[in-house]
Length: 190
Image (tube, rainbow, N blue to C red):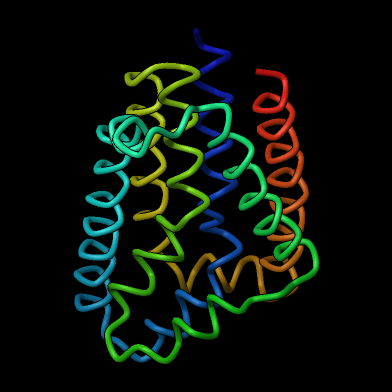
């Protein structure tokens, strides 16, 4: 059970890519005063959490409503995660560029950057595979980690720098690609 929790926690952490998204977070928050930045971080994680919990609790119900079996969803979700993983490895950032066009940072940071299609897919598959409680606890902890990163974005980015952040993002992308292939294989084998 502890191994499952660790596996779920780190998979969600990789898909959220909070460290790799530091430059985007910083671009939204660098000219904001510290109190406003903390408030915006709180609001962003709150909105991301609402979206995450919606699919955590009702994702399997939604699949059932549309008569989608979990095996098919694993293949489709694995393909989506594969695309995101390859995007990270190759340094492509189309969602991030589109997110910069928003006037308020809360929505583009909350979704698609924190709780986007990759996280939603991962959450639904993990609820089916590992159960609600392990996935719920791992998700809540990841939201806390994301809040920590958002509220300290300048210090973290100063420490890592652009190259460090990009390198971590590429490593996370490679791991995400491997997770995606695993989902596809599981779905295909079911």
